Image (cartoon, rainbow, N blue to C red; front, side):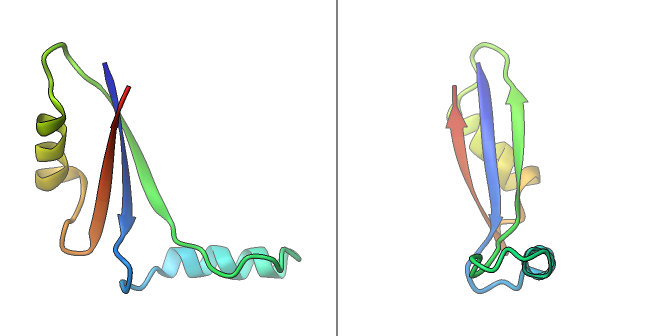
Amino acid sequence: MKARVHVMLKNGVLDPQGEAVHHALDAMGFEGVNGVRQGKVIELDLADGTTEADVNAMCEKLLANTVIESYTVELY
């Protein structure tokens, strides 16, 4: 089984990387973009018996800074 974890900055937290991408897109002529939020995707190859609760614990302890980031877990 595999898990895909999406980590994003929470709403209201400044995203300087997203702003840099937004300005670069605008400078390249892509004027239809109103805003950019940048995050990360972490893919995990899980051993048999690993649960979604285990993955959530990984996120809480290491993969996401839950003070400023939110995350979602997708098992597949």
